[in-house]
Image (cartoon, rainbow, N blue to C red; front, side, top):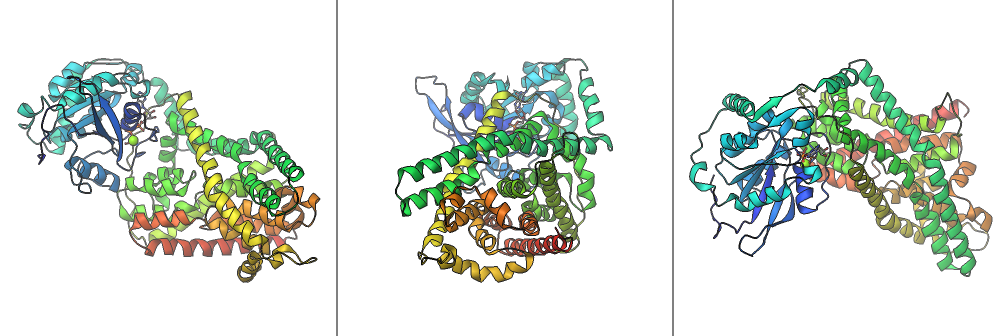
Length: 628
Ligand SMILES: Nc1nc2c(ncn2[C@@H]2O[C@H](COP(=O)(O)OP(=O)(O)OP(=O)(O)O)[C@@H](O)[C@H]2O)c(=O)[nH]1
Ligand SMILES: [Mg+2]
């Protein structure tokens, strides 16, 4: 492949791209070099898109140059099997959306998995383009007792090899310098590369790796021991299940004091506003709309942080990839592969990145099925909804040593989503997405201790995402609802909800939802909650605040109001609804984008609403039948 437009001078680079196997540390290098905050995690398939950043190269002649650095999805070969690998192939070959091919390729190798990573590296080198190799993760190689010889590797590959430790910012200056120099000594020898077949590349990778490894001591024992336990077919799932159980216990047990404190702050603010402002629309707007509404969801920040604390630790240590491996058998039994596990796991944060992460699935039917069930994984936006209902109806008692009932119910709701997803996948694989299950190969990342700084940044990003949602989409949806609830003003003696526009809207939707036990306020809350699920909570809070006819009622939190006004079967039906309902327009939009059309998003919306209605109904009718 040749560049159609060679740069005028050797130092005038325009772009460089990071390429290599998944989990080699490309995004970690990219972040270190450009100051970006791309997601990195200890499992393959994290990056699924092309991302660009700016890298300042050292100036040789006083003219420093800034180049565009590209982070790409990990790839095993240019014979792209999955949509994310296709991105890498297209960017490298200059076929990506009319963009020029990058001027320099930076191959990122995992020093501790040299032989494996050299297979694709050779394919990249065969392009004969200006190339630099970052021999990354040399710290892990050392930990494993490997002593490497970068010069020998450089000799064998015919390009500069720079040892790096992306996460400790080691070797960055040398790497940048090598990128700056790359074009000047590319041309002569490189174009003469011959092309190997895959088996030849494998064989040669073995030879090159052997020559570059100076000494090797086997220190894999601890890791192997850990894997024998954690990946044991019987013990492994038990440990995984136990771990998740602890996570959900912690979400309630640890968060409660913080959530209570935040609730106190919101209550106190509301008191201050009521004192300071005269009765009227402005005061109502602030107390009913902003504080009762948006405040009611912000108090769940501690829960969200605790949940992500565990998720980030499991990701960083390398345990998540083991979990995927453990789940492979279960997934295979419903016609999916363990490949789907990571996208589904991401969907616990939010279905949108989850659906995007399906790009690493090569089989189109597998991928479609995964997209369609991703919304059934309990995203973090459901957490406030679940938490508020659980707090209102489930007593904070223990059902065994250290096992809180509230955490148990939360766990059960997550499990319900997973079981629902598996059943749906099974059905889809025999109907609309028919096809055989594809095999699953995933390399196990090494165990690593999570770095405190990465963890802190990850948690901060999560908290920020949540607060930004609260300040934007949740705020807007809640305020819009407050306006619809507040006008027209009620006559004396009439309830404000009955008089309002929102009341009229609720009356049209309510007949559909009444059979499954929903009251009018719940029906109403579902509409703005399409913008974001958390809005169900803010909407209920605002509705009850607007409708409260005296100050004392208004001062009560949403939890107290619903526990006083709803029956237990109604509350349980609401929980069941949220396990299934596609209460999120953005998810539907991203499904349209990823499936290139309206067919599947519509299918998804219809089947999820149908399930939500049926399961809310079943829950309600059974609960009423049991006399709850
Ligand atoms: N110890 C150590 N860990 C590293 C190094 N570079 C990256 N990591 C870790 O390796 C894991 C994978 O890094 P990523 O940057 O996400 O890998 P990637 O190549 O972008 O992976 P994909 O996006 O899946 O292709 C993360 O847990 C990083 O923290 C390194 O030099 N040393
Ligand atoms: Mg990446």
